[in-house]
Amino acid sequence: MHLPLHKTLAVAAGNALEFYDFLTFSFFSIQIGHTFFPAGQTANGLLYTLATFGMGFVTRPLGGLVIGRYGDRAGRRQAMLLTFTLMGVALLGLALTPSYAQIGVAAPVLLLIFRLLQGFALGGEVGPSTAYLVEVAPPRRRGLYVSVQFATQDLAVLAAGMVGFTLARLLTPEALDDWGWRVAFLLGVAIVPLGLWMRSSLPETLHAARRADPAGEHPKVPARLLVLGLFLLLSTTISGYTLDFMTTYAQDSLKMSASLAFGATMVVGFAQSTSDVAAGMLSDRFGRRPVMLCGFALLLPLVVPAFMLMNQGHGVATVYGAMAVLSVLSAMAAGPIMVTIAESLPAAVRSGTLALLYAVTISCFGGSTQFAVQWLTTTTGSPLAPAWYMTGALVLGAVAALLIGESAPRRNWGAGP
Image 1: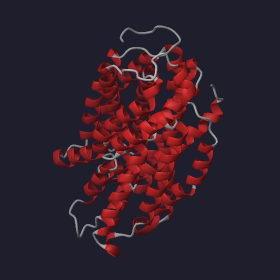
Image 2: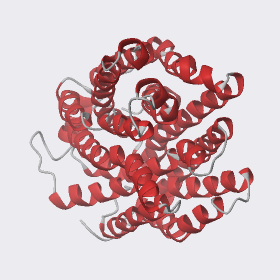
Image 3: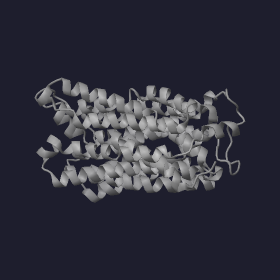
Image 4: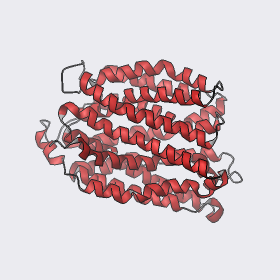
């Protein structure tokens, strides 16, 4: 079954809404810290907030296991509807939780509970939705179809940055701390019904994909694929969350105003969303591995110099330009990775395996990245700590890209399993 590309936007758009909800927490870390971890009660409010952001990743493997397997049994559409409903509940809870000043220690406890639910929902989202896109796409356009999903995720970054920029421009810092950040969450709540309606109209793909899969009902997944997939996802996860950290980094380390810092996030979102589609199309034309390797080769030597330029005080244009270059190259490296893994997995276990692999990787490395780079920056006193952390992850990803086999069906590009 092949659906027109515009029909599959319902999958990608729903995915984008979930990522907007999840990442908005990161972009408003400073304001949320002031609300739930006031300076009078905790000496490191920002670190506490980033730790709470990271806790949202703890339940992602559980969500990947439960909802991913549910997608392999009940269908991709049912799993996607479930994740969206749970995300809406968590988002509404986050937006309406009273501050520490109002209800004391119960406030950060409720914040943590809703953050854990958010992580559970998102942990189960990526596997079923990516499996669905692979199964509805024509074989020679899978890179493009899956890239649309990641483009809309990055558009969610752009949207969150635009909302933050607008709120920061319109409100005083006190108003942004008191209630402005809640508006960003409530905007996500308002479009949850639209996402549910869009997804409920999609046809199911599970049974047709199983019938067409020669691996059968009880396939074995090669351990080599799982290990290489983990390292590929590790590299792009750390890179992506380091770049998404720019709103906080720009305010805390570069001493930019909140509105200009949100502008950096907008640059990241726009650059990555446009590059995602280009990377997907290139991977359909030239293969997944060549595009990945090209992205890694260009990105690796530029990360540290880019952060050095940003910290030399050359102004906003330098920061935005450096973020744009890093974001484009990061998208080129990351774009073909998910379709490579999804294509390589048997249909009978595609949703569950992909969801769990992605969720475990994100849980271990995505949840810790922003806390780690902030801690390293504070401990070492070096504003280049995020750059070195990101570079180390990219080295591991580049090695995995060299070793993994080509999955694109057009021609036999690469060696390997």
